[in-house]
Length: 180
Ligand SMILES: [Zn+2]
Ligand SMILES: [Zn+2]
Image 1 (cartoon, rainbow, N blue to C red):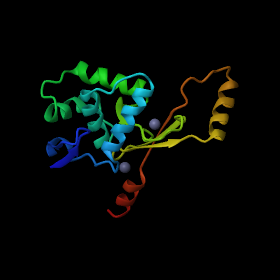
Image 2: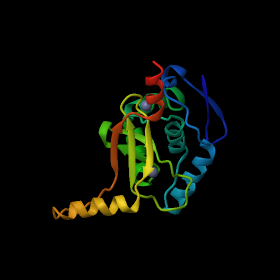
Image 3: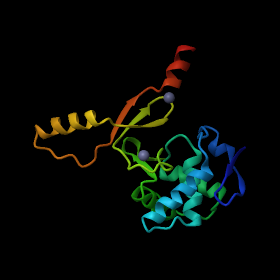
Image 4: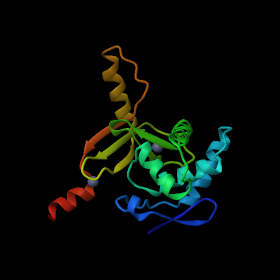
């Protein structure tokens, strides 16, 4: 059983059957939730108790999850009667507030790595491991952005979204492949 500490400070156990194949994130969930609440407040929005519960689930797993996987997690933990709109509305709120990212390649969601940062969010390069499903969020360098913009400009193209999703094999999977 994994123990998840929610914002309220109450420790709850998460159904290990649901979570056992997800790695635990090495972050302080309480601290991140507080930062998320501040972040929302600065935007004139409110991170309600229910949204905190959903966000803490997203923060507790290291692998991007689909809306339905999140719904299942939510049902086995905090809200047995949760319905799809509950999760969809929350995901939209988190995306709009910059707290999570949607991975287009497989329509999954992952918490932003920079919730506790005060700097503006930079264009991102996501490194997607096709073997274990992990995602790393890395920041694009200014020279990469310039190169992207210049090559698009040659086609008279204006870029709106500068996020990239790169597929491959993560460091951990490469190591374990070698030891097989
Ligand atoms: Zn981010
Ligand atoms: Zn991997």
